[in-house]
Length: 157
Image 1 (cartoon, rainbow, N blue to C red):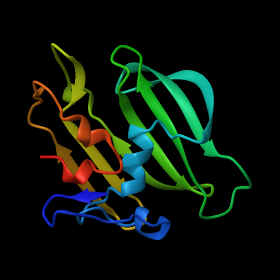
Image 2: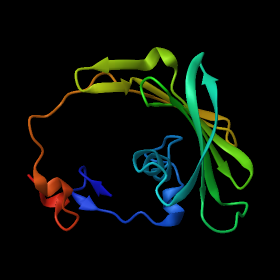
Image 3: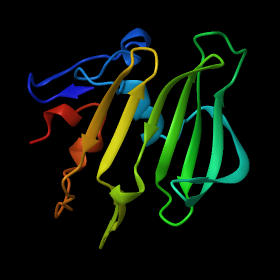
Image 4: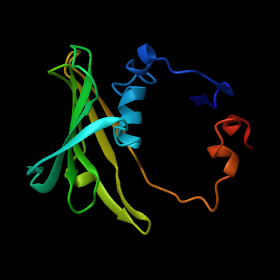
């Protein structure tokens, strides 16, 4: 992970990946799972359900291999209209560990598509919560190609 404040790349180990990201209830692995659609996991489409009175697809994600008490899995409610996650239950083994929710009032549309303006992450073990608020979106004119080159992304101007 590139940290602009120190202008250095830091390796995220599996132990650090589940730790608090910047003092929040989000972990690097939580964000990675959402952005890469739980890559490497087996997905099972469950019967449709409701989340905040919105019709949602429900998808369970489990990693391959045997399940232990530290195995991470997730159950995701995806809004049928916007394709945004309304709720994510994160499990360690069979125990519900965290719940991420996107209140329905935080769904917004701009010319580029739909986005959320608030995400709440509840840590059920610690009894704490982080609220992430997004105040707007902006589409840059162009992004330098170096940002997407793993060998030199942190060197881009």
